[in-house]
Length: 496
Image (cartoon, rainbow, N blue to C red; front, side, top):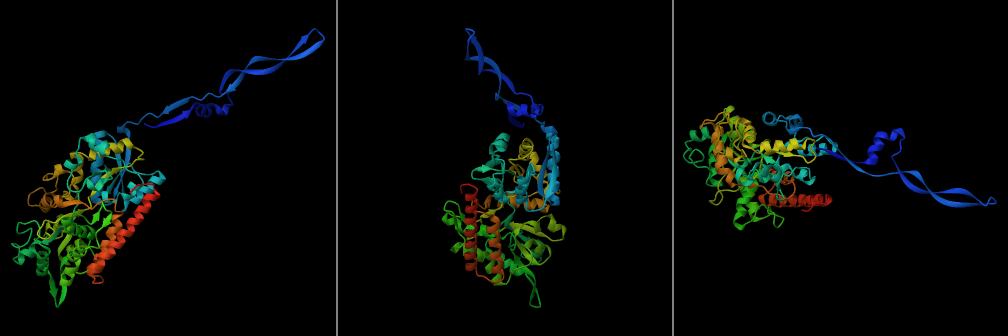
């Protein structure tokens, strides 16, 4: 419902002003002069009061209320990633929403990155009502105060407990300064796994020694993973034709997960929120880069490639692919590869901790033209039905955010227990998600921090930089962007 407050003067001026009509007539005293004859010889002037009409202005507030448009007659706009699996998921959700409410949602796919486009659209008044954006990229929208708060409006309304009903780091990615600003449909799915070429391992007779073929979930150590990589590396005439290992791509999540594991015994993290301190340039930060990149490069089993490890694995250029589970999904099997997924190595004999980026989810905008529709759409996504429609993506999303879908695979394209998707879902949902927490908040831009980590790792892989030099470079870059972040907050009148 939209309301506009008009004064009666504005209202009458708008409707009758052009006619030159008076506004209101009222009585008021006015002094005039009257001539009186006295004794026929003397004339004097006497002032008397006589009533006359005077035009005055009386202000009265009139409320003009536009009739609300019923939800079933509304058509909203949804922006999301211009990628076929995503578009199909948006369309499924739009169909479910229309079935439940009668309201329509027009899907308008957009190229990445979405947040700057949303901000530009807000300035132009052409913003969507809802958008599908990854939680870790919401910072610009937080700073613009552009998002609908969802704790009361969605979660409490639906009777959903975010801590109990969502999996992994999914809700953490949408939490900012104690409030939840969207509804996730995915949890983290990168930085925590290693893709193992099962047929190659079996051919070497090593399937009884390494995960997941030996029934274990995690490599016992980085040394164990490197030993397998050495066995799988292929060389011809002294030249490497298939590298034993690649971890290039999604470097920030892999590296910060290792660092998080190393820092845990002393009760801190790669970003110490309480002390507003980055811990890259530390003994643990150096060791994390050694485990992640420097040592395997010095061993001759990894190098800097011109593509990420997923693409390299799918092109047959590397054996073990660490950091993104795509080669183990149906996409890899459809190309003729036999990758299977296991967890990244233990560290000092302990289960590793992982740094998560959360995943995709839906947000509503404060200035949505159809705010009622936006809220109802988010409420629908925050249900088993809504989450299931999205979780059909990629033939079945192993990294579903909804805990009620953990262990449920009837919505998968192939729900059989032996399907790659189901096997990977079990590992990701049961073993990796509990070790994963969101990367952190209020440290600035993960785009900039992540870029620094990726560049440092590439320099190390090219032997242009030592692990010590990389740690110092990452620290300096992270601190510099943090100061810019604080400056941006101050300019917007926001508290850090």
